[in-house]
Image 1 (cartoon, helix red, strand yellow):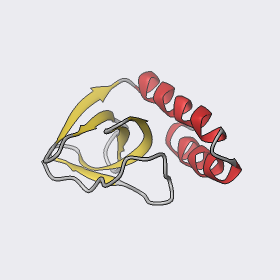
Image 2 (cartoon, rainbow, N blue to C red):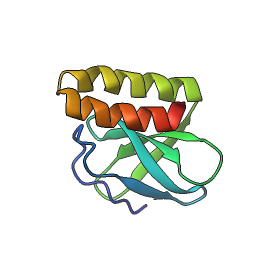
Image 3 (cartoon, one colour):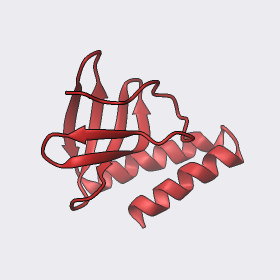
Image 4 (tube, rainbow, N blue to C red):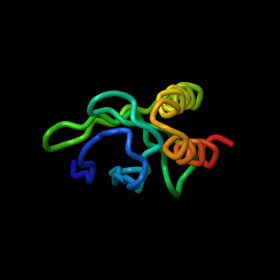
Length: 99
């Protein structure tokens, strides 16, 4: 499955999107771990995916809202250590997604 991921650092300066074969465009909500990110549907009902990137494809795992929120909150906690500007950008994305 094609993807446009690139480096999976905590950088929020560039938006990241994936095309899911059934649910269409997904946007990255938060990094979770090396090669794993949290994504959400862009247009359809709010569905969250834990996406694991492989060399030539991506594995999509549907996860519940509360699990997605937990991963995003962990990312917010990590971003505080990176400085106020980084944290503010992740906070804005968190608020747009979950509030």
